[in-house]
Amino acid sequence: MKVLDYIVGFSRYEQSLDAGLLSLTRESQRVRVAQSHKSLWLVILSGLVYLYGLWDEVDSGALVLWLSLIALAAVIRVMVCRRVEAGLSLATVPALYRNEVNLYLTSLFSTLAVGAGFWMVGLGGSPRSVFALILLSLIYAIGTTVNSSIHFRGFWVLLITNLGQAFVYLTIFVQPAEIEVSAAIIAIAILLNEFARRNSNIFADSIRMRDENRAQNIKLEKDKLIIQKALDMATSANEEKNRFMAAASHDLRQPLHALTLFLGSLRHMVQDEKVLNVVDRIDETTTLLHEQFNSLLDLSKFDAGVVTADEAEFRLDHMLKNIADAAQQEAQQKDISLHLYTTPIVIRSDMLLMERMVRNLVTNAVRYTESGAVSLHTRRVQHGLNIAVIDTGVGISLEEQQRIFQDYYQVSNKARQTAKGTGLGLAIVKRIASLLDIKITLKSSLGGGSTFNLLLPNRIVVDEIVEPEPMLSKDVDGQVLSGKKVLIVDDDHSILDAMTSLLNTWGCYVDAVADVKNFRFYLPQASQYDLIMLDDMLDDELTGLDLARQLQTTVPTSKILLVTGNANSTRLNTLKGAGFKVLVKPVEHLQLQETLTHMANMS
Image (cartoon, rainbow, N blue to C red; front, side, top):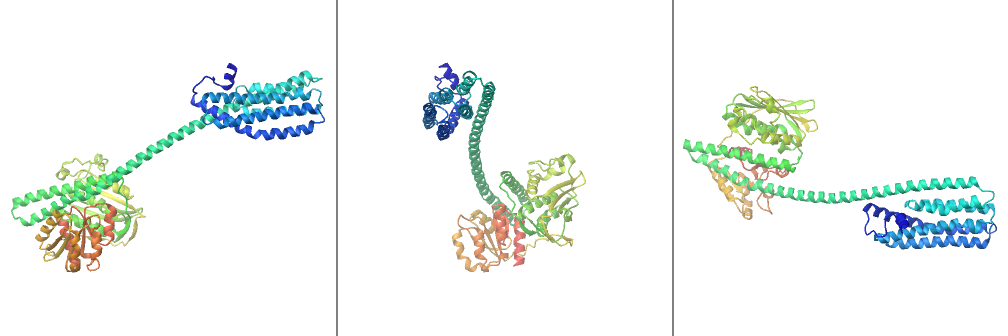
C-alpha cells in the first residue's frame, strides 16, 4: 500500500487534500483521460499494420495473441478513463485515489503488453521483426511520456516495463548482443525520464498559476461587485444629495427672498433715522447671510461634482457691464471709481459660471478698497483673452497669496476685517476657473493693491472688435416704475405679500396670483400689464417657464421676468436661453428695482 500511496502522491486514508494538490490531481487525471480517448483507434490501426507487415516474419499465432493483448490493454484503458471522467468533477479524495491507481495500473498493463512482444514475437523472429518491435516500443515510450509524465510519480517503472524488456532482450537473448542499440535505448530512457520530470513540474506550475489567476479573478469579481455596490450607493447618495441641494436651493431661498423684499418695503415706509439705521444693519446682515448661503451651497455642489459647464456663445462685454452696474452703487457709497474697459467680444463658455467668477472678484475688489478705484479690463494676448480686475486696496502679502484660494481662508490684515465673509469666494472662483479651463493668477503687494488676471484660452474666444470703450453704469430712476401695472405669480404667500408691499412703495399697481390654477383667468388680459413676474418653481406639473411661454403669444418677452430659487446652472441656462430675464432668489430690492426699471424702459 505504501508503494501505491507513493505513486498516487497521497494516502488512501486522506479525507481532504491541500487545495493545490487537489486541483493538480483532478486536472492531471482530466488531461490523461482526454488523451487516452484518442489513442484507441491509433492502437487498432497500428495493430492492423503490424499484423499485415509481420505475418510472414514471425509466428502468426503469437503475433495475433500479442497484438490482441495490446488492444485489450487499450480497451481497458478507455473504459477506465470513461468511468473516471464521469465522476471526476465531484470526485472525493478516496475516489481520486482510486482513479489514480486505476490509471496507473492500466498504463502499467499497456507497457508490459508492448514489452512482451520481444518474448512472444521476437524470439526466433527475423531482424526486420526485431526492428519493428524496437520501433513500437520506443513509440509507446514516447506516448507514455506524453500521457503519464504530468503525474511523474512511478513514471520510471513504466519506462522499465517497456524499454527495460527491450534492453534485456537485446543484451542477453540476441547473439551477438546489440550493445550499441541497448545503449541507445538506455540513453533514450534517461532523456524521457528527465523530460517527464520537467514536464511534470511545468504542468504543476501551470495549474498552480491557473488556480492563482482564477482565485484572483474571483476576488476581482467580488471586489468589482463590492465596488459596483459602493458606486451604486454613492450614486444613490449623490442623487439624494442633489435632490436635497435642489430643495435647499429653493426652500431656503424662499424665506430669505421674502425677508429681503420686506426690508425693501420697510425702508420706504419709515422716516425715523434710528429705525432706518437698524434697517440698514439688518439689510447688511441679510446680504451677508445671502452671500454665505450661496457660497456654502455652491461649494458643496462643486465638491459633489454636480456642477458641469453648459457652454454657449454670449457677449462677454455685456456680461461685464452688468457686473459693473451691479457693483456701481456700493462703489459710489464708498466714493471710489469703478471703470470698465472692454470691447465687443463674443466667447463660448458657461455664462452663469463665468459671471459668478468675475462678479466675486469685482465684489471683493470694491469691498476691500477704501479709496482710489477698481478697474475691469479685457485685453487680447498671445494665448487668449485676459480679464483683469484691478484695485487700489491694501493688497495681499506674498505669504497669504499662497493660501488665499483655500476654503474658508480669510486674509488677516485689519483693513479687510470690516466686512468679513465666509472665506469661500475665492475658493469658488478657483473651482470655476478650473472647470472652465481658465488660468487665474494674482499680483499683489501690501499697500500696492491687487490684480487678478483670468486668462481665457484662444478656443473660448469666438469674435471681437478691437475698439476700447469705457463703460459706466447709470443710476436707477426710481420714478420709472410709478404707475406701472404688475402681475405677480408665486405659490409662496409670504413672497407675494413681500413683493406686493415692495412694489406698492415704488408706486406700482399689483395683482398677485398664488394659485396657479387661477392664472388662466389672467391670460386674456395679460397684455394690459406693463410687467409680469413669474416664480419658476411653482408645482410639479407647471413651471414659471411654462407660463411664460403661454404669455409669449400676447405679451412681449421683454415684459416677463422669471424669478427662481433653483441655482442649478443647467436650469438657469435653460431659462435664459428661452429669451427671458432671470433673477435668482434671494433678490436684493435694489437689484430688483434696477431690473424692473430697465425692463420698463425697454417696453
